[in-house]
Length: 110
Length: 115
Image (cartoon, rainbow over all chains, first blue to last red; front, side, top):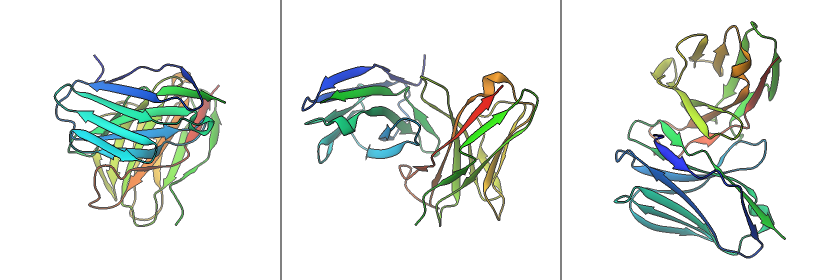
């Protein structure tokens, strides 16, 4: 079983839709949870990070963590074509090494 | 403030040759991480280094792969006697000393192709 599970998609939505991206994990030692966005042939860029269970909002993006269920989500409201990218969830234990999900490829169609 | 720099961006090697990938962290960052990304797969952690020290190499293959981060100069990921299965994108990330675990900034990657 992988430490971090993420549906690779692809996911295609119309412009303006609400997008829901999810990851599950198996190791309760993970403490920090991140979402990265990666455009084609580029390095990942940090979008959101959370430490505790609950929600964190930043503009059109909301990150949600449920440690009891070992489940994290990223919601994108009013999705735009420029949001088309691969979204990677990531999480860290307390030793600085990061574990990534496989990434979900998202396409937002105009 | 320049971001994380990686070079070369693209590297082509024949089987059996050596590949050297370089990573210059962001200014003021002393922690470097290397990841490998295969097509349709997520990033796989390889190694975590601080200046002159390997902190965690649990993701490094036991043979042919090595990494260093000298006191001066960039971090180097070295792959000896490359094989076709080494073809991948290799990403480097850096973080500041004592920074929170979320502050890893990624470079643009080096795409290695082994013929």
